[in-house]
Amino acid sequence: MPTSTEYLSVVKIPEDVEVSVQGDNISGYLVKAKGPLGENSKFLKFREVFIEKLDSEIRIYTTNPKSKQKAIVGTFTAHLNNLIRGVKEGFEYKLKAVYAHFPMKIRVEGDEVVIENFLGETTPRKAKIVGRAKLEIKGQEIIVKGVDIEECGQTAANLERATRIRKKDRRVFQDGIYIVTKP
Image (cartoon, rainbow, N blue to C red; front, side):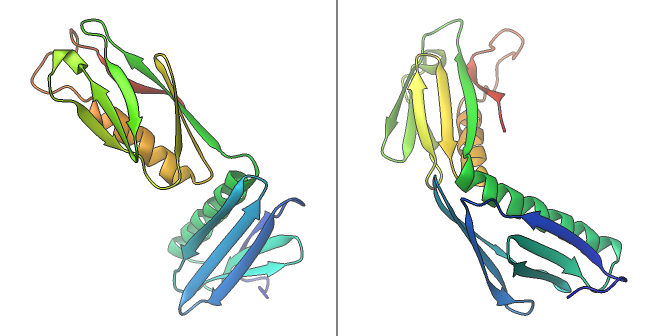
């Protein structure tokens, strides 16, 4: 339990979410969350930063309140908030396929997104779908949904990166897939 000379952060656990904390400061903490949308877990480890669960809250604290440890307490707090928000509400990225020259076709094949006819290219471009992220394609709008913010964000970034234009003037060739809204 922290004393008055320690740095403390508290994460509240909603009623419809179950959270378990396993491990210790030496080997690291495995935090699991289970909610209406599914399950998610996160492994967190840093020296002199402790995590403990008390009733309906999680306490993250350090016994050595220097700037590095305070920063990690804030980082762990953000990770745990995202963990709880993901299983309760989920995350959603919206992307838009923009083309002026050649109409591109986008489809999902297993764990990849295939982008055909991008700038008239004969070879299709591919982007990986990371983890448990789900994709919905509605015309030119692409929606990436999931319980893990890192998986959803990386999938959206993979789509953007797959349609990056090289060796052409970007002011003229503005075709591509771009993130419009993110959580």
